[in-house]
Structures are given as C-alpha cells and as structure tokens.
Image 1: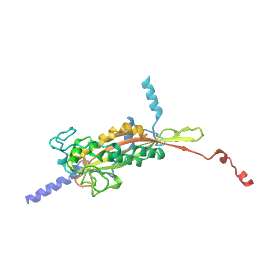
Image 2: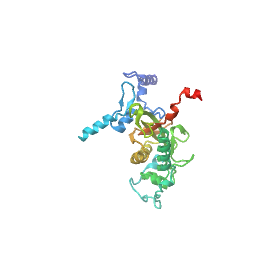
Image 3: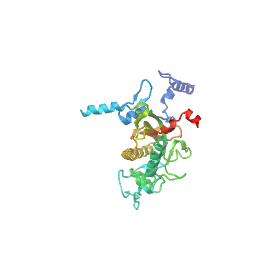
Image 4: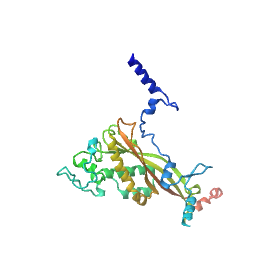
Length: 79
Length: 246
C-alpha cells in the first residue's frame, strides 16, 4: 500500500506542469544537442565579425553592408 | 584518447622527453607538406578560378584539421603526443582505422562516432549582403559592368568524444588551430573575415548515445565578383530589315 502511494507521488511529481505548461520531467531532463538542426543566423555572424549589426533595408528586406555609414564613422574618428 | 584516463597528462605544458616514461621521446615535427592533403597553392588556384563558395570552406576547414591531427607532433597539447608515443592510435588516417574521424556531416559515420574522437563539420546558413545598388560596382575599360556581392555565414565544427574531459581537450586544440590561422586565412585565401566566433557548451548529442560534443563556430565573409560581358555592339545593331534584305 505504501509503495503504491509512493509511486503515485513520483508520477504526480513528474507530470506536474510549471507556469508555462511544461511537464516537470521534461524541464529537468537535460536537452541534447541536435547537430542536424544546429544553425547560426547570418545576422549574428555579421555582428560578431564586424562589431555592428547588419543594416536591413526596410523596403526590400535586403541586408546592406552600408559602406557609406562605415566611411562616415571613420571620417568622424579621424577628425 | 579513447579512454578518459588516456588524457591525463603527467606534466602539463612539458615539451621534449616525457618524464616518467624512460625511453619515450616525443616525435619531431614533420614538414608541413608531408602531412595531410592540404595544398594551399592548389586551394588558392581553385578559389581564383572558381571563386569562394561555401563547399570550399567546408573542405578548407577539414583539410586544416586533417593536417593538424595527421601527426601528433603538430598538436599543441602534449597529451596527444604522449598518447601517440605510448602506441595509442589517436591520429587522423585515411580509411576506417583512423584515430580521429574528421568528416563533413553529410558523411555521418554512426559506426565510428562514439567509439573514438570525431570532428564533424557542418555548414550553417549564409546570407547575401549588398555592397552597391543592384550589386553594380564599376565599369571596366571594355565597357562591361562589374558586380560584387558579399556573403556572410558560418561553419560549425562539432568536437565529439565519449567523455567530458576528452571533448574539452579536443575542442581546445581545434579552437586554437582555427583561431591562430586567421591572419593567413584572410591574407592568402582572400577571405574578408575569418574568426572563431563562439565555442558552445558541452552537451550530449542526439545522434549518438553517451557522447559529448562541443560546437565550435567559425564565422566567415567573402565577396563574389563577376562581370557581365554583353554581345558586341555591332551585333546588337543588326535589325530585322537588314536580315530580310540579305
């Protein structure tokens, strides 16, 4: 009888959900790395490589390197 | 290297004969052209004729790592040399009996990964970036339009090992190799940028049981240039009437 109660308690603990509705047993299980699904956004890569966010044209959605901006910054620093 | 105890270094940072192992001496470094199959002049010729493309960068990373791990004398961490001197196969070799698997993710070897160290290379997303209006940058002396576009993206080298300590050492060696070559990458390989941008946390992987991985991400940027050579002006002026009168 006691063992059965113990199992019930364990089951209820593992199925208990947190505020976001995620079962506790899932939250406590360490996530595994899926290499096939691993990806890094080019925007983040650009930020890492050039130290500034990429400029995205609001009208076309294209990423622009925007060299004029860079050159003007260099000019200001030079002055 | 296949066992965590293999990685224990009796004297970290030592170079030369390994203390405590009489008669065991570290091998002398081979000449760069004796190991691996990286031929910088061939690669640069390929890049000059074809231009950079993401697949070439996958090959470049693989060749760099193969060259580094083909001989333990090239390794910075003496634990690699110690393991080799004691007869444990932990170097890259062509074929099934390689000590370290270095491969693209498209050539996934489920039978080998998990049993020995591995470095699996994966290309991530890459994106175009406009350098000028409609990619137009100049007109050459023949009157042809020159265009240029920049591509920004990254690759990830997943260092894989059966133990957490082992994968840390492997990841450290790979990260230092890829980081320290960046001046040569940008100068001789005509890459605009080349940088190890992130070394991820240790985690288990889904693809193999009880195997740990550290993702090492390499960011890169290169420009793609091309010229559109239009037909000769004389041919463009041919009219249908001229053709009908022939």
